[in-house]
Image (cartoon, rainbow, N blue to C red; front, top):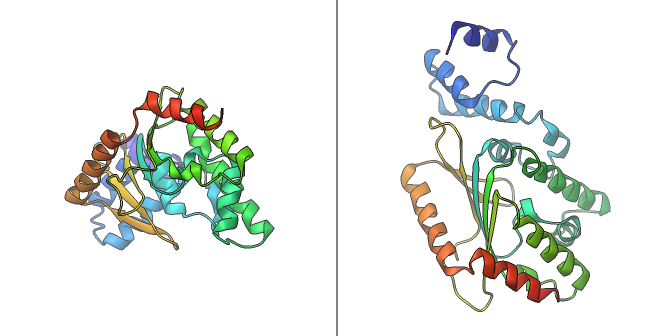
Length: 241
C-alpha cells in the first residue's frame, strides 16, 4: 500500500477500507490475538455495507451478513427450504410463522430483513450457485399461490447471468444430508474461503483449507446429483402449470 492509503486508513479519511488492507495493518501492528483480529475484521466487513442490518440484530447475524456482502462467489445448499437470497416475501413469511419467531411484528421484521439481504443481488452481484431440494416447494402444496409466486421468481432468477439454480428431485437421496451450508469465496486472494453452517443462535464458520475442501467436494457431488439448470427450469414450469 502507498503511504497515502495507510495514512487515510489510520486517520479515518478512508471510511471503509478493504479487509485485506486492515489485515496487513494488523500484521504490521503485531496484533496476533485471534479474537481481537476477528472483532476488528468483522467491523470492517460490516462497515462496507453501511450497517443497514443493525436495525435487525434480533433476526440477523451481522457477522454472516458482512461475509455474504463481501463475497464474490456464493455456493449454497439447502435441503429443506429455498435459499434465503432467493425467497419471495410470502415464502419468507410462511417460514417465519412455522419457526415461531414471535408475534406479527417479529414475523414482519424477519421478512423485511430477508428482503434487505437480497439487495446484494441488484448491484454488482456476486456469482450465486444455489442447489436446493424439490421438497422445499412440494411443502407448499397447501399454499398454491405462494408456490406459484416462489417458483416463478426462481425461474426469473435463473435467467440472470450471475445466478445458477439446480434442484434435487424429492424422491432421490443425495449428498449433503448432513445439513445446509454456504461456501463463500472472496475477490482478494488473502481472504480465505469460508463455510458457514447455520445454527439457531448464529452459526459456525469454517476456514481451515481441509474443511473448506470437504464441503466444496460435497457441493460438487450435489451439482452432479441435481437436475441440470435447464432441467430445473423445466421442472419449475411443470409445478406451476
